[in-house]
Image (cartoon, rainbow over the protein chains, first blue to last red):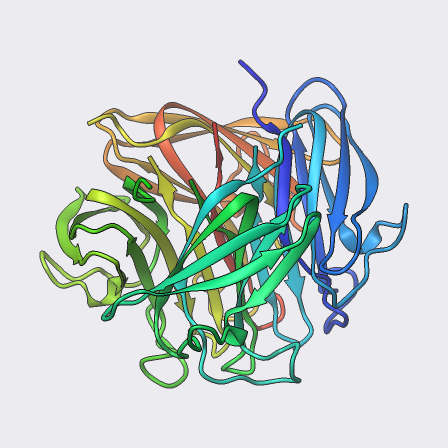
Length: 123
Length: 123
Length: 123
Length: 123
């Protein structure tokens, strides 16, 4: 059976809330890119971040071992630079192997959970 | 590599909540159309809004520079007319370049965040 | 330009919360099927509801005029029978014209908004 | 008319919250895989779960009768083993018949509903 997935993915509505309520780390406001590599080869994934008013930043390099899933918080990315909070961004992920990508945000700024998750756009 | 995206997008469940709780502008109830133009040419995007009981309104003209993302709140659209609150609408976006579209709503009417985001329908 | 949309749609996770908090009708717990008919012909849409333990129920007949959007709460369907609350269901919509379908649920059982919306599955 | 659906589905952002607020079972934190079998043959569906740091677990075998829908909470899976809470996972579902899959999570850890639902990735 062919490995499930695609090589290009896009998250358009990226946003890191600037503050949180509740116990850390579970309820800390965050946004994550979740990547499933169901295949038998390591996947190298490069993220590029897009903004409203400046040139794209990247690549952020991630590795997903075969038959593993990676839930990467954007808050934790550091190289080439940290992702700013309270600023809209988009993200394109390009993988050398078929993977599947889902975006999730937990927004606990108002002490009440704002939570969403959606399969990213594939091509 | 071909530019990622499509030229026609649809948001079906459009709705602007009529009131808010929390600090402005972060927690103001709003709905946004997020558009990523990952290509090297400026994208001209025209929005048409559809309603239950009257003819469509538009076009609302947006411009997304190359390698930029635009998070446009429907609340802020003014030309040809403002978008009514507390009234269901749909939106079709037609772009002259490949783009990717995601819809997001923050509903803070009840002091608790109602938040969702979903990739729009592409064709 | 070809009319945007498809003729077959599926909502899998259907559920009507059994109680609500907040002002009626805005904050009443509900689930809606939102249908955009961007074309120039009236669309006739038939819904069939599927359950875990009994035969499907339907058709529920809806009409969406040309260039109009319909936000139909499942709570308000009556013919052939009302939709039960607190019971999981799925829904298939078949249209004679291309349309686009999005599902939305507002769950206000706990006084805090649970809100989601997602483009339905198209074929 | 051909039966609506696909045979391979992926949920990437799987997560079982570790605690709850509110009346059980309605408001218990949970994650569910919702599967619609709109066809006339029983569908056998096998789930495989993927993790960050260990080999995949499965198959979990499910059966969806013809013209029925199944809302299976991951919390309730027991064979070959229970799904851990507070640990990220992904899920691939392979069916011998066309089905449609939607993922839903209710997170009631903070007494406020975090709710999302999204159509899974199909191939």
